[in-house]
Every structure is written in C-alpha cells, then in structure tokens.
Length: 406
Ligand code: MTE
Ligand code: MO
Image (cartoon, rainbow, N blue to C red):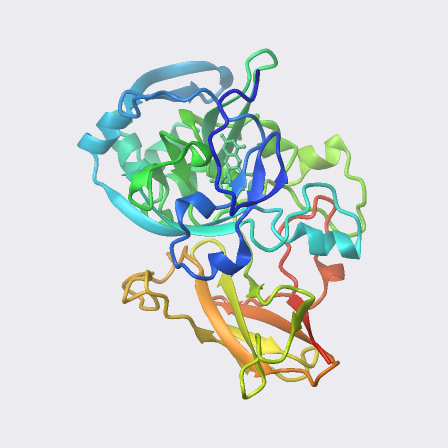
C-alpha cells in the first residue's frame, strides 16, 4: 500500500499522527543534547514516505531553468547526482534548528480553535547538516548568480520532493525567493548528511534542501527537482498553507490563502521543556534542599537572528530573571561564540536553564519564559495577539504550572 515504505521509528518519539507519521521529540531527552540525536529528531510528514533509492550516491536531482514567461516550459535542464554533489563541491556544515510552523499549536488552540495537528512545544530539533551550498551548484552548472538570475526574470527557486500522489500529481514542494536561495550568507544547503550520518528515511534520505532560519516546511525532503522560475512553487503547501492571517479572520477562504504571502522565516520563540506543565513536585524529588525548581528550555529566532537573552518570570511578568546558557557535553566549545554562529547566521537554538523558588507545600507556581533576539524583538505575552486561523508561528510566552505535594 501507500505506506509500504515507512521506516522503523524510535519508541522515544511522541507521535501525534500515525499515517502520515508525525511525532514530537521527547522534551526531557531533547534538553540533554545540543545536537538532537537523529532517532529523536521530530518528524513532520504530510504524505507517505516515498520509495527510496538503495544507493544514495546515484540518486539524481533534476535542475530546471523554467521559461520565465511560461511555467510549463523548461529552457535548460540537467541532472546532478548526490555523488557529484559530494565530489565536485565544497562540503559545508551548518548547525540548524528545524521547527514546524505549527509548533505550539495546542496552546494557541486552547485560546481559540485553530486548524491543524496539535503540536506541543517540541516540533523542534537541532542538527548539524552537511552538504553542497545551493548557490555554488547553480553557479557551476548554469553560470547563474543572483544578479544574472534576476535579469533573466527569475524570482523563485522551487524544490520538489519524491513524496506525493502520482495520480493527482500533488507532490510535496516549496519555494524560496531567489534573493534567499542564491545568497551565500543565507546558508541554503543541498544536504546529504545529518549529524555526520546518511540522512535517515524520515528526514529526507538521500538528499534534502536545508533553508536555515525558515519554518521547517521550506526544507524539502527527498529532493528530486530544483527549478528556477518566475513563480512560487505551485504546491499546496506553498500556496494554500503555511500562511498567517489577521486574528479576526476565523475561516480563511481559498482566495484568502492565495492572496496572503507565504511564510518564510520564524519570529523569536522560546519554550520550557522541563518541567512539564502540571508537574507535581514531591518533596525529595524535583526540589532540592534549597527548595527550588530547575527549568530547562530552548530559544531560537528566524533568518539568522540570534537570541541575546532568555528571561523567566514567576509573577506573570511583573519581575523577570535572566536564564543561563546550558553547557552541554556535545555542544561545540565555542557554541556561544560569534565564530561558531556568526552574526546574521545564528541558525541554531540556544539551550538555557534557570532556577526559581519552589512553591510552598500544597501550592503551585506558574513559570513563564520569553526570549529577545538580535533585532530586539521579543515574544508577545498573550495568545490573543498572535492567534491565527492555521495556528502558525506560536510564540507567545511559554507557561508551565508546577505544583508541590502536601
Ligand atoms: N518535505 C517533503 N518532501 N515532504 C514533507 O511532508 N514536510 C515539511 C518539511 N519538508 C515535508 C518536507 C515540514 S512541514 C516540516 S516541519 C519539515 O520537513 C520537518 O522535517 P523533519 O521531519 O526532518 O523534522
Ligand atoms: Mo511543518
């Protein structure tokens, strides 16, 4: 059947849908690693996993220059294999946090119903992605740089996955503006490795594009075609999904979707991964002798903006304390250094921790966090100000309530 190619999956993942398979990372284990182990990287599949080639190196990607005046016509076309990408181009690695645009939809949907899978806060993971820089591939094979591409009338670079419905022709796809795709500093990779291993089946084996700082939807897995075009990808997920609307538009029409701009980048967000909401502290467990609660979470922003600080409150935002960066064993030594994450290319999360006073026996405390990024942008306090019909880009303060037993 359609789901004949699904891989074995870790029992540690937290599934929210079986077919197609969608699963969150386990929040507590997520906080133990700077590089999320491949087996627990969250999975977001819109379609069945396609039949994958056994030999990664001979997998071909089609590169098409479409006719700028006629989307149906291709002016120049060639194929490139993964082997060529490995051998003929520099091998470049970037640390990139992928996050589904629907991350934290369950909280937003508690404020007001929003359409989509109810992800909690861990449709987010971080990996070291390795591959060939996209701009070099287009330069070497077509002699194209941004300037030339624009002069020829190209506006978008489209990506197509192998997953889809061959009858309706509905394949997963996405696109990004040429200004992003052909700019070296934006870091787009044709990636063939994830954390130093072949990319696992669920994450796009044998090749995927990585669009750093963007919503996960733009990093097309199981990549089989790249096309320069005047138009955005005609994929459903580019044109009729992954768009936000003003908070009074409850039921956007097809027309509303077509009109709205496609979302590319993430805003700033942070969330608490430990303790879980509703956690109960029993004395001698979870609260140490000083009667404190240890909190851990992540923070990231979009488009290469770094997170400059994370703040935590236990009095609904009247007073705040600064969180500390975590020093995890697997993180690079210079993880908080501008050499590791240069300005404008801070595509990876920062993991943080904080300690707040434990509530008195029988009482509870609500802990909230927010992050501030390089642009001075901060997370909004309330869901009411960011609610949108599709439940995307959930970045209100993240709150968890911790109770203490009698
Ligand atoms: N690429 C293909 N071909 N098919 C998909 O369903 N899902 C996208 C993106 N790329 C998708 C895809 C979405 S919405 C997200 S959030 C990320 O992949 C998830 O990447 P991951 O499963 O490796 O975590
Ligand atoms: Mo997504």
